[in-house]
Amino acid sequence: MEEKNIVREKTYDFALKIIRFYKDLLEKNEFVLSKQLVRCGTSIGANVEEALAGQSRKDFLSKMSIASKEARECNYWLRLMRDGKYIEGENLQDFIDKSDELIKILTSIVKTTSQSRLQFKIKNSQFKIKNVEEL
Image (tube, rainbow, N blue to C red; front, side, top):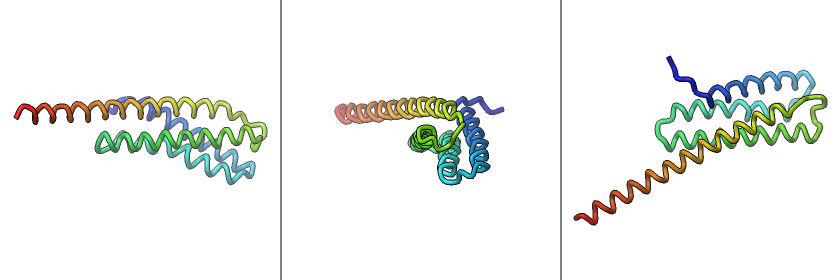
């Protein structure tokens, strides 16, 4: 049985909601911004999936960074729709709040992974220096 992963679940649920919203937008003949939104909104979770199957820490970090960027892009399109009153009568704030949450989570993962990777590199380089000095 596969272990529960909150980031995977949140990004998957977000993608499902974005797809439903996209369908609603198409019914209202909104074709331009909706395509941008569905692409980045579903890409977040796809990149998280790829990160979780990463072949290395560097691969994991790269995919999580992309997921974070996609979440920021999605947030941008949602705010643009809201502030431009492009979609009348839609409550976009829930989507914006959820994308804000994903941005915070993914940014935290990227920062933590980057810091631990840097610490590992520093630790290894210090080990090599000590070994050379011992010779």
